[in-house]
Length: 199
Image (cartoon, rainbow, N blue to C red; front, side, top):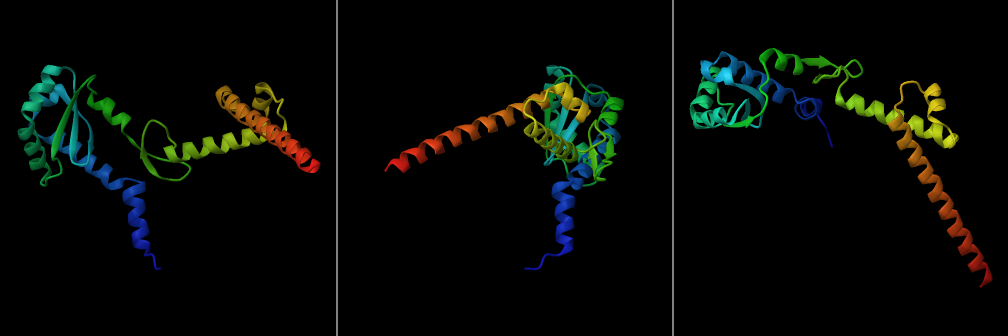
């Protein structure tokens, strides 16, 4: 079976990094800013764009109903600015509307220092690397507690600076549960051996 590098790269770019989806969202948000919907833009802001649906946030339900009634005009206006049909539907939800400068800072693209992936979020490190680092830390902590089950949090903190007490307690419970299971299993097997030796 031959796998083309082109197919692998296309899979990584499309599915894992989500670059086309992020680019489409950027284009739709830019079209919203350039559109001549000034009276609506004052009361609504784009929240996200997914699978052809533009999600808008408004402050109150009266404006949500007004925008819902103007849905066809808004969609056609945005698609006209885009020069193509990307927006197929419009969903409106009420809540605190994000101001444009807050929205840009929250959605700013960042480069992960560990894997160089481009991501959006408040952390410098991407979600994948954060998860991987947390799993590695939990594994190290479990090994440390496994070597010394009577290890206290303060001693563990000296050996592994930066750990949280919740992570320590979770790892300690897991190790103690494993030790208890192991002892139960050994007791059961010892009892079976004694019974089988009688026969």
